[in-house]
Length: 47
Image 1 (cartoon, rainbow, N blue to C red):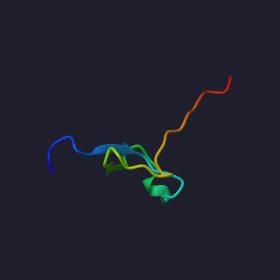
Image 2: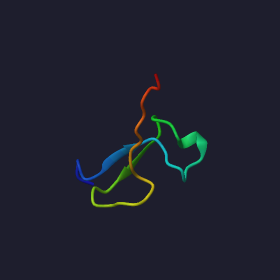
Image 3: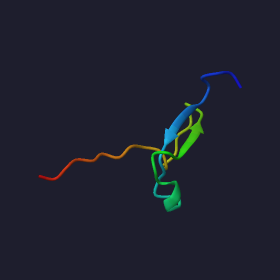
Image 4: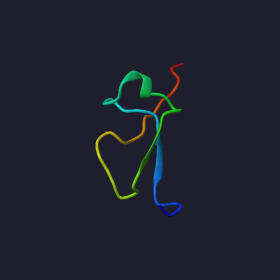
């Protein structure tokens, strides 16, 4: 595999076991792939 052909996504999703829902969990994906398990989560502190 040539360097740079995959992208890393970190953490887990609603579809993973709890042990995989952490930042240290890493997977690789092809840049053109998409599904409903990949996204981002917004967080903010509550005053």
